[in-house]
Image (tube, rainbow, N blue to C red):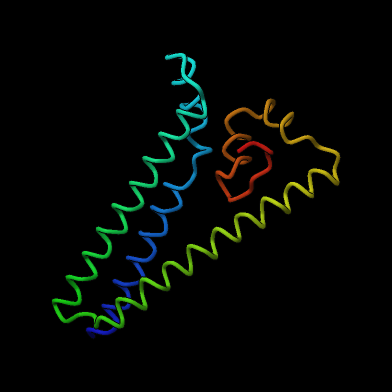
Length: 149
């Protein structure tokens, strides 16, 4: 009974960690706020984006540190071995890398498809507003259609 419980707990932890990584990774979802802050305070958009990027990286580091601390506690409590903890961390990194590769592949496929259809994704984004921005620049569904950053 302990092994299935630990397996479920581990899978839930991986899932929660992955979801939080996905939501934290997408600067494109911040694009409107970055632009608004830059406009309101007369700042360079690239400088504002850099602040958001740094904040996101710090957030990732903190999340990873907290996650590792919880795993260390599981090791201390005898629920995981050090080898199991390390294997779990490696697996999470592997899944994250696969997800990023998949996202980039989808972006390339969407850009090729738009090109084949004769559709300019930048023009399309202007007509679809927030949907196009989220859907387009690496946001929802992992499909990046825009040519922007």
